[in-house]
Length: 126
Image 1: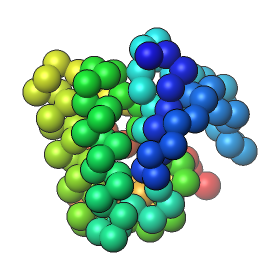
Image 2: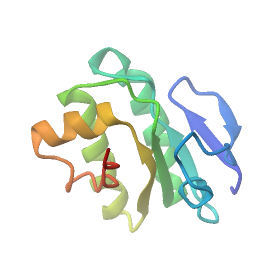
Image 3: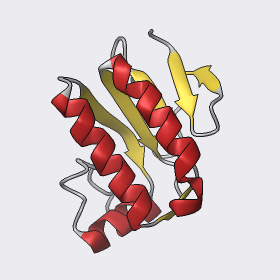
């Protein structure tokens, strides 16, 4: 299962995506056998059906890397879905990690007090 990446629109992509500006190669490293789930730019309630489907499919992998670097909008429903996904994954003995999180994702999680619960990577200091 190495080298697989799913996006919220259901397309498969190569997991070895190039690092974004400001991201080190270590930030882009995918653990062996991990499935990468790229969160959509719009991580609000309207996009939840597609994202939920991708997350449910990723549960069987056991190791999941979430990529939140392109999230531009996030709401309570989107963060709840991520929280429930992580809880279910852990209950099955799986693990999740983050490739990165956008400022929008960090800000929304911070406002709701979910940064630690979601285990988001620390926001880069300006």
